[in-house]
Picture (cartoon, helix red, strand yellow):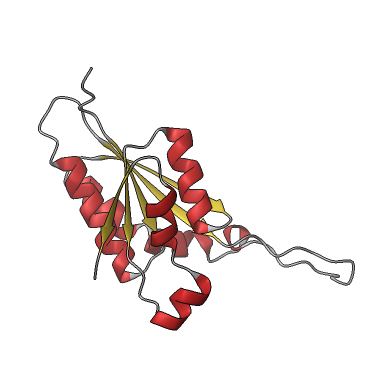
Length: 151
């Protein structure tokens, strides 16, 4: 049976390219003319929380537990929330910890995502060769379609 409703995952990190990817994901969801509404998932992947050692007397709290987190989260998700609201697109946001590519792929598989929308990298050639690119890893390993947004 043809599934007209699409689940669209967009990688969010607060960068201009991430905002552009968010706009594309919402536009893709809003462009579905059927009665079945598509849903956008905005996923922010933060680096793993620092591990405490026995020498730490006052361990650092993760960013999500700090006072400025609410304001920071509002700024990071602003574009996707604004666009989804304007176009009446269903939106769910989430924050997870870990390697960005691995977490995006894990979330996509768990939620049975149809399309992943991700911004291309702005890294230089040498840095990309040494560290790799999140978008490259996602394109290479995803089980669903991947839409890479270029700047």
